[in-house]
Length: 320
Image (cartoon, rainbow, N blue to C red; front, side, top):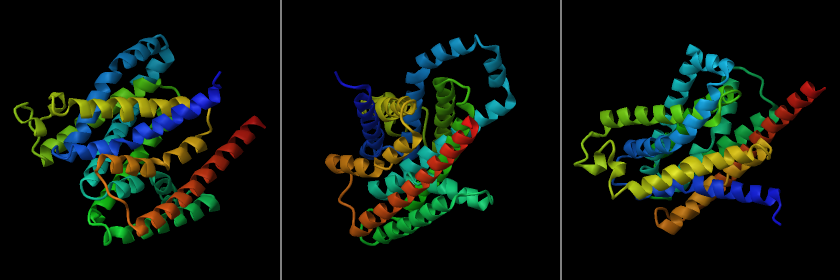
């Protein structure tokens, strides 16, 4: 009989592959403006999550303490901020997919552990030496990767910067989740945040991409994902990267240390690029990208290990 641990590794692997495939699928939809593509994914993801949301919310209503917390203005503000952060993250990332290579986009959008360390240093908070060293190595790797701009025709500095903005934006989403998920059920948190992100990006798309409400022009329609041309692409993005991938990650976190999941996330650029190569949306990266990516990932691993050591020390103090 297959052991539980093997099944968990299979689930983690499938989740990472699902999440990694999103970039290539988004690139297959390049007839649709990038912000609108991002909104489409969130619209359908929120719709599909609704049944689970209502089940969890129904159970949550039985707990008056949790409902009082949910009604707090602070909670609503955090949910709003989290949704906007998630929207900025996805919008910037999908825009970067149109303006740089898939590999560069995936590399830079996953550097949020380095961003968190850099932000802590700016705020003059204590940061362990290992994390400072890891962040420094990571930023050097990012610099080396940028040297590939001249060697790869589909790579641009603007596109790389957009992916970095996406990495910065998602930090707000993570921080909000860390605070609210201590007491809020998973889908009671995720659905409102996803819905807010969908609405926020839709408004941005109407302002900057000429998106319309009419279905007569499906490629620029707010609800164009319902058309036969795009429904299967968006359904895949909503079900696999959107729900299965992230729900799988949330599930394995119950049994695996966060450091294992965090390091597994670092395979997203490699796996995503391979999927993109199979689907014909990206070519083979330059030598600079390979070297820079390796250094960048080493730096990120050092940061993640440093964070895990801090958590272990905090837990030992509490247990003691």
